[in-house]
Length: 484
Image (cartoon, rainbow, N blue to C red; front, top):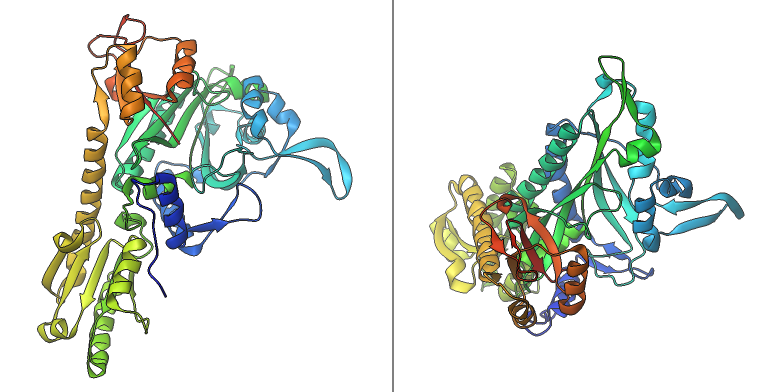
């Protein structure tokens, strides 16, 4: 076996990303253009994301269900903005069983319509509300430019769909799910995010308001890592989802939808990865601790392996995801590089001296070289100590990502020339006061390739500032950036 070659991020960030996917065995190309095969190591990361989200959904009263992959075109056409927004991305089935279908079927791009159809039968009374449903599924959107995990023709996700008696209840749900997404991004994936409302131009097709978590990737670009939509009565009126209140009066429900996809895995890779490969937050790492046994003489092998196996068993008994690398014919250095490439948070090194002293060497993936190593950690009580070490890795990754975002966020720009100059030369996030129109926003995007990522929810309504484009005073704050 030979050492992998990963293109440095500073040379070609896109190539670096694809190299990491290949060398860490996360994905490979599929025979269908724009689709990907998710390999076991990559799928294990997605399974961890699923676990973390699913338990939070259930803790807040949501139930999982499943809805059909095929959606009648007439359903999509009932909501004009919805079908207009998704029309370019639809995959349509017109033949089934060798015969022309009476009505074409769309392969699920999202499920508001098919779920709205079901909700119209499930909701009759105020006693049926709130109705809180989530599904784990695949969807298809016919993308022209694709990149594994970030934008593919077929991808995996969860999509929540809820129905409520009032606008306030539905808005509370929309923001509650946004908070859950931010909690998972920061507390599980160690990615600092901005919670914000999307502009009209970036709003989900058919929504009244769209909120998102925006994260900065390692090249300074933004990635929308999760979205939550307040749909108002748009879909309930189309699908006649009504309920009788306590006065026996009929009302349309207010609905929401929200989702996180396998794009989140791409966010983890790009927010934390370095030139050596992945750096995985411990909660999402398929392997949290890898043990590498080291010996020079063959007579040392048996004692070292026996000791390493005892350490492994102790950690496994403490429900730590641990792996002992017993591969023959490979040098310790190769194994170190291999596990660093795969982003394992902690590496334990065990040699003859460690066996004699009843200890291990610990290397933390988020810190380079000797800085990340600690020698002589006793093996006794190690299982109780490892969770603290893993928390140290998580916190380190988060602080590094936060410092990077802060260093690459520019504020105080008050004229168009400075905005365009910074967009061209420095990139990153640009935080400004904004009073421009939808047309202004689209024109800026065309001229600079920057999009209005969001209006941060925590920064609205503060002191007024001057819009760099219009010169008007406004207390509306916006974040612009190039985005994946």
